[in-house]
Length: 571
Image (cartoon, rainbow, N blue to C red; front, side):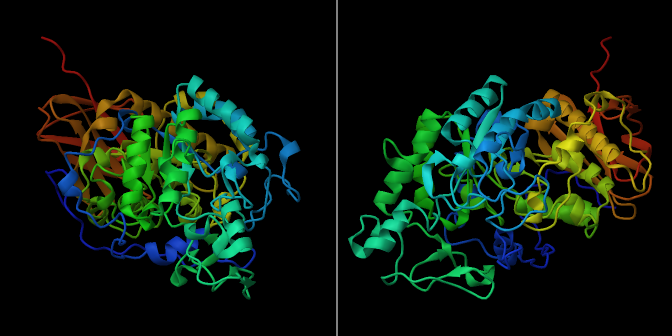
């Protein structure tokens, strides 16, 4: 057993994560997720761009938006959430629920569908919406932008987005967009002009073109290739891809178009459309000065806007106060949580070590923490279909430092393998049957194991997420507090930790049982006087401190306790 009395803050020991074997998509083309997993899933050094600077030097400078610390995000991949208007379906759209295929595979999801599904989000209790790319693009994922100034017509166009923004804000929620400023589509008007006019094109210097005329070809897997210009993706990632010509981000004209100009892409959607922030794609592959300018412009337009960078490794260099507010927390959240809870390949000691990072507190509280995303397999699928393993993982996600992000469908137990299978159509047949009252019922970890009906699984998980989100909303320590590990027990798979705000005695002790069987848990709590009562937010059970310990006689397998300190009785 390991007992830790100080807050986790040091740089972790190097424990390489488990890398999944690449799986090609339906067209034989390596998926976008593979490109990341093949390199970023391994213990690589930081990039030469935004990931090289020392975060400690800027620790006192970083100030992330307060609302992010209180946020619970819901991530929507628009093409797969809901088809709200069949009249804008792309040609060849397949029936909803068809197993997903490659980039040109469409099921008809759109922003009208997101608007129609907002009631589901309200019932769940989330307060922030993160949309994968929505701008005009030839693919279903839209990471190959053809027109940055308009929403894709198949998603309902600009009018549907404007309506959605108003609806989100009217409901007291925030909305952030996915910005792809590292590369464009080869169908973008800028690149098409280069292809047509060569060095006479006014966009010639926006791309790194080696020779003209430009020639492309498809390889044996059907992937578009070229030797004539720089495309996104290193060879070890399955690239470079000719469909994704890389933009020269430090070119003043590119910078003006995307960021600094008075009518730049960034200003247009932030100022005119009132979006609340941006998640920037492959941010660690773009030069730091570009993001410095981006932060400067974004914060002038909206000082409260959230700027988050995609990074699969250590993001310390992004958290110096002059670029990002936070980052996608793959290295210190998603990867260790997957290995601990889903795959059961880490001991509690190892899990605690893998959480350690040197981020400033403002950065810790603004990290985007997710168990799964459009670029990873679904958590339950990684767990071999054992949805019970998602329960302690969800409890950890909602009680850890940073902004939790629920990938659409996780709350009802959706499954899926590597991209594109992780982008299945949302299961509205199951979601519509979820009883909202289930989230208000008494929860316990003793639900029967085995082959549960889909509705039982969905109801249990949805109710758990509801309770956890509500508890987080009502508990300052869970949203703003420090984090320290109190005890780990490698012999039975349990771990306990504390969330607390200095000077506020309303702390939270969380105990997790990552084993499939019930175990007692003994938690040292020297900070709480004997007789102090803690109430489990999940079950309502009361536990008193005795002899400097909180003792849980039985904590159900794949379950946890979220113990909130009761106010001391007045004498």
